Length: 431
Ligand SMILES: *[C@@H]1O[C@H](CO)[C@@H](O)[C@H](O)[C@H]1NC(C)=O
Ligand SMILES: *[C@@H]1O[C@H](CO)[C@@H](O)[C@H](O)[C@H]1NC(C)=O
Ligand SMILES: *[C@@H]1O[C@H](CO)[C@@H](O)[C@H](O)[C@H]1NC(C)=O
Image (cartoon, rainbow, N blue to C red):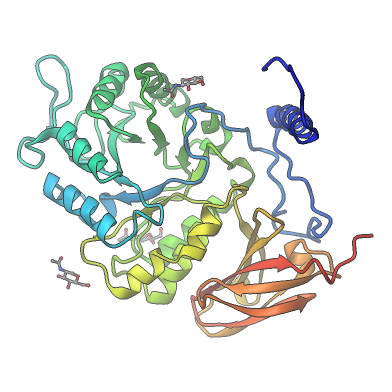
């Protein structure tokens, strides 16, 4: 701690006291201060204010204060990638304005390397698809103000049978750093049955030893419940198997990821996998739900479509600044499912606290028929006497200035409406 000298304003002293308080609490857990306007919910599925399993900024590389945003090659291109696609994607992130909205990581997934190492044991970029090498690509991406991500595997081989980094962590991390790589997705194939708690830390240490700041994304598929241990190792950890471009996969993954909400926070996020928006397997409403819930869950927003060739609908979804702002909110608390009722629990209310005492609320109709969904204040942790303004994040307008005790909306089949509730201070008197 810094030595305290000279004159301190009251603000500084308060800040210092708060700092000590936060750090003391943080070492055990981060417990959200409950604002006078808000309270824990009655019989919640999940208390939206529970952040008790979160350990503050554990990796210490200074990254991931908010969930990472960018693009990844896998969901659309799989192995069919090359340096032209990556460069054109970087260009498209700029020309479409997506980069300005925060999508800055350009992440190459599997298949960028040759199928064996060189005579010195180093990884080599595929000479047909990446003839100019990764350093050249990183320079290009950096020249656009973007960041470059690469992929390897905590096993003998990658999933597409390129050389893995297990037992080569220091060489490979040094190579990535020398190329100017900013992000590493680290997969789980061919892991020789060695437990992930042993396979993932060496790459963290190897990256750290390079001295280059590199985002470390663990892709362990949620097998050994990484939320329980990965906060000390990486900036994000996959909580599930791979997503596929279907309603069934997306909804299954969302429910698994939800379970780990109290463990996420600035510096380390639960990762329910990359976005499928724009790949064609879901309807407009389903993709909007996918994007809304990913944002609310503080999931990484890694676009997985071909951004060089998006439909207007795809662009509308992934460029929704108000939904992105929920994802990137400074408070960094993962929103979660707070109520499921109706047929098979398919009328769902998802919510999470935001900075400045606001709440993000999603009404999600997972049934196959249109329905009215109602969020009562006690289910989302608002005091019964509170009045809120309601901002509709898809209509981009305030639809109510003083909702009290509950809020309802007609929600289409598979659609998800998303709102920000802001307590109306003038009406409430704190007792
Ligand atoms: C390496 O780890 C230490 C301890 O967490 C941290 O302070 C430092 O910033 C890290 N360096 C890099 C380059 O990530
Ligand atoms: C996609 O995921 C769902 C849910 O896990 C599964 O039922 C389906 O078979 C998967 N589809 C493909 C093509 O892998
Ligand atoms: C662009 O996307 C449309 C579908 O939205 C597809 O039919 C077309 O083939 C794509 N064009 C290219 C060049 O990939």
